[in-house]
Amino acid sequence: MKWRRTAVAVALVILGVALQTTLFVRLRPFGATPALALLVALAVSRHLGQVPSLAVGFCTGLLLDLLSETALGLWSLVLTCVAYATVRLRRRFEDDATLLIPGVFLISLVALAQYALLGTIFGEQTLADAQVVRKMLLPAVYNTVLSPLVLPLATRLLGERGGGRRGIGR
Image 1 (tube, helix red, strand yellow):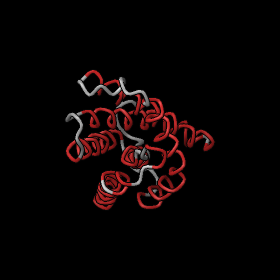
Image 2 (image 1 turned 120 degrees about the vertical axis):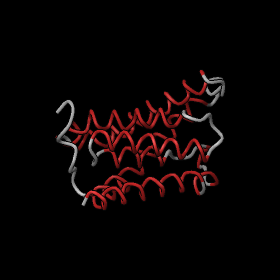
Image 3 (image 1 turned 135 degrees about the vertical axis):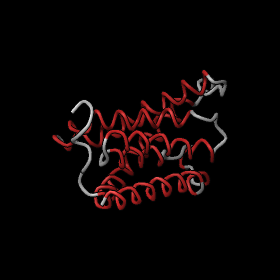
Image 4 (image 1 turned 135 degrees about the horizontal axis):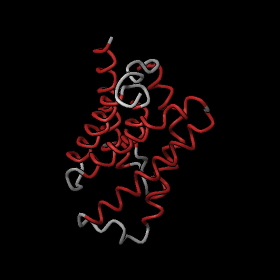
């Protein structure tokens, strides 16, 4: 059972990263693309334990770093933080489903702001762009729109959370 969940999580991550780096590079409504890999990392982290969730976030970010022209490690750090926030907040989302969709928006927006800030610190001049707010808001909105498709798919493929109840801090 663990191997099946691991294989499904890896397949979802690879599919999300592949779609973001190929299809959504060309498809840019209003000049921005969905942060699909971020959404997939969030969706998968809802169903895995604490350590596997962080590993999924890091590996998803590392794949994005290797396949894009950004500084190595930026997406890894951001998506590890996304996985951590998802693990820490998922009980609140399970109790109240009306918080799930706004939660996706807020986590996406904070993650993209973190990416912009770290990118500027590491010399990418991300915050110097005049359209930086639009480039953070639109992907967060796109993730919110796509979340009713991605989150139930991850739930169906991964099943209910199995390994997340045990571990440090539980």
